[in-house]
Image (tube, rainbow, N blue to C red):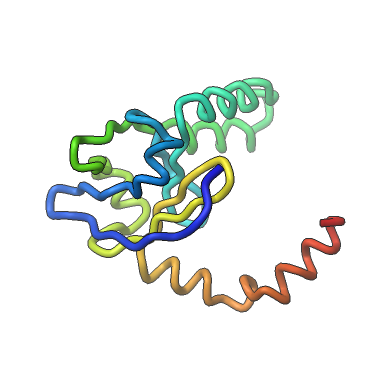
Length: 143
């Protein structure tokens, strides 16, 4: 399980340090893909396999399913952690998420997300992310 948030910087070559706490769960190789809300999602190979199986079970005749599967898989890349604990974020993924320098790397249960610093600060500061608003929505879901 992944949790917490960490600030790091993307270097000139497009590399970023993955927090050691997250490297343990992700492994030496993992999948990085386009996520929702203009961030990147990172999955361990095992979790990616589970997700892939779920997506494969969806009806490919559904236009929305095809669009989501294409979005999710076409943007995916297997990345490898180097000896300094860094990964190289492919250019297309850096562009998608707007990653230039400062980033937040956050744990979200079964995945890790990589956010541009200003986008994360804007998103997490949004009134929709207030503790009260989230608590109300969770109560409606019975949590």
